[in-house]
Length: 300
Image (tube, rainbow, N blue to C red; front, side, top):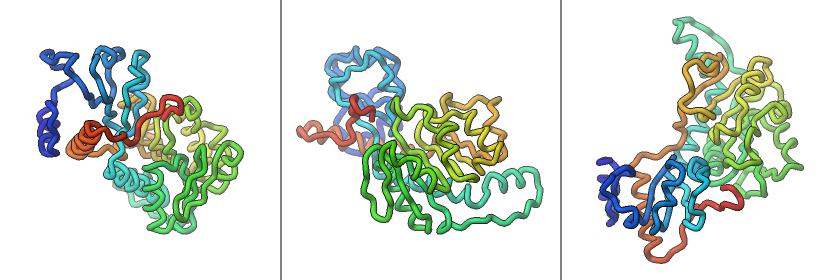
C-alpha cells in the first residue's frame, strides 16, 4: 500500500489513497476505487461511488459481481505503456514460435546440444490478430516492424495501416486460413468464451502457432494440447488460463511445444497505473468524459 500511496503522490493526485480493507474508511466517503477482483457486493455498499477503475485491461472479474452498480462508470486500464508492453510481448511470442524457443530452452535445461534449422522467416509468416483494439494495433505495428505480414479479424472492420481487416463470422474462416501464427487479443464476452477450441484450430493451416494473451476463458486447453500433440499446432504461447495460478500438476507446464507465462504480458507498473488514474480523476472532476469506459451492452 505505501507503494501505491507514493505513486499517487508523485503523480500529483489530491485524493486520500487508502487500502481496500482499511476498517477506518467510511464507505460513504469513497468516491473512487481501483480494483481487480473485488468480492461480490462490496462495490454496491459504497453509496457515493463515482468511478470504478479496473487495475488491468480486463474487467471480467469486476463485471462478474451480480450486484455491480452498473450506473457507475467502469474504466478499463489502457495506458500507453500497457499497449507498448503488449506489443513487445506479442512480438517476442511470435519470434519464440518462429525460432523454436521452447525447444531451445528444454535442451539447455538438459545440457543437450540440439541443433536444428528453423524453417520460416518473419516475412514468410503471416500473423493473424483476433481483436484489433488499442493493444492489437500496437502489436500489429511492432510485428510489421520486423517483417511479419499482419492481418486481423474483429467483430467490425478496423483500419490500421498495412493490415488487412477481416470482420464478422462470414470472413473468419478466410482469415484463419491465411494465418500462420494466430494471436488472440479479444475481449471476454459470451461470444468469445471457448473460441480457441477444435473447430477454430482446425481452420488454421497445419503447423500453425498460437498466442493467447486475451482471456483464459477463451481457450479450451484440452483442445489446444490435443492440437499440439497431433501437429495441427506446431507451438503455442499461453499467458492466460481459466485457473490462475496454473496448478503445478497441470499438463501444460511440461508440454514440449508449449510456453507458459504467468499472465504478465502487459501489466504496467504501479507508478504508471497510478499516474494514469490520477489523470483520469482530474479529468472527471473537470467534467470531462472518461475514455475506455466499459459498455455493459457490448461486453467490453
